[in-house]
Image (tube, rainbow, N blue to C red):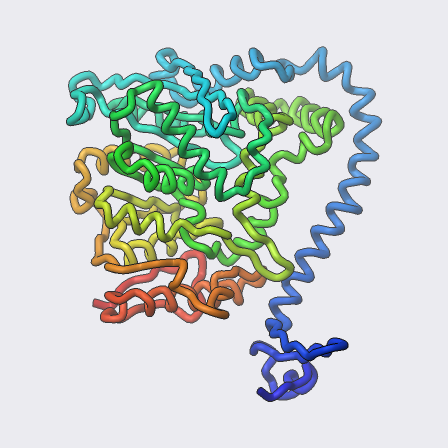
Length: 490
């Protein structure tokens, strides 16, 4: 191997290639490889910005706001409509939010709580239960003849209330159970079990969900599962661990199925890793006062107050599990344990699956759904003009329609409109798919262009390792953008 210096490589116009530097130690010589300067420069700019905000700007803001918080604290108590942290005020705000988001069914929604024990630890699981209002038009299960139950799992920085805009439409066909995952929601409480490795805790989530469903529905009833973002990662583990419990599975903007993120994924991963959604709880009363004052003077809605109270609670810890699943390095980031093997197991078992992406999702881009369709034959659809969360506004109605259509197809994905289905890869094993230094391919750099190239290399490698995909012509660009569509050349 020829060892070249950095200056020599620059003179040869190879700034974008990998440069080999020799590092000499006292006893031996080791050779390490470093990526080109654009990768390092992009990471350097990002970390300098984060350092300035964290250690320079935020302390100044805190010093300025502290006197204001102390002076206006009494005013906050007297003038703010609802700012108390105890559970009654939070649940009261939640009810007002439900009345606005799902006016047709909010009066019939009941809050159910069950205490389950998993690995010697007790978890209080809260759920919003919505009865089916469709009567004979509801979809029944073959096992019991009762209306089928759809279980809804939220993502990070959320709870069951984030699904509220789907309740009016979905309750025409299904009975609904929207769960608060452990570590999320107003009933969350700190647990020593949260210190376990994140991958192990994902399996604990599955055990908690199964125990809750056993208490509410019995040990044998199957459910239709819909999950969003981080909840989709948990749903895939749950369905693969308890296959007899799930009748069909729909994943919206799923996180963690692919090891890579979007071209801007490294930046998003940093904020998820640092749990920025719970910044107020880290600042204690100062952060809570400052945020409450800001919301008060902005005349914030009850919904904003509700989310502020839930996310700033010192008892929430679900975001820490997500942070443990994401690795953020100096120049790159990646998902530690992608669920590719588990989603492949579900396909092999014949579980009907559907993946839904927003066309403008920059966190988990829709081309991930394209690759899962090509590799495993999982149908996927895109909702135009929507980002990472298709759970609100007009997109919520479109999403609810797709869920109802997919459920009515009784597992026949070909009956769902606007779904392309292709032959799946017969054999696949993520653990052996990439070997040696190929493992570095799935790490997403901070630089957007380099991230697009890394995603392209990963996709091409996955297709080469897939036996059936070798027979197909592929259209995978050299650089994959967030809005790229990947197709087969048949």
